[in-house]
Length: 139
Image (cartoon, rainbow, N blue to C red):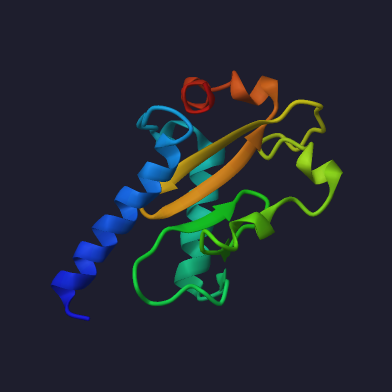
């Protein structure tokens, strides 16, 4: 594939990722630089890609596409078809805040588009109110 076609597909994948998020609410920009925990999640994602330690489902190819990852599966990226496989392994993990690691009965699901990658995470009520961008992302 030539560079122009690749760039066009990459732009389309980013649009598609943002479109997936738009299904859950209005598109709101988020400055991850003001929230160290989220910045760490994105940094860990990039580090796994740069180190070659990231793991992919068999459907991921060299062509640009929307990929899914979660805070509880760092370094694992999958296609939309395989995204349901990223569910937390246990009910306890499913009820644990990804930011503070405390058990809670109520988890607020949130997601962030990092280019064409959708990063999903769950927050307890306390963590959700800790940063105004989380409130916007989950309301």
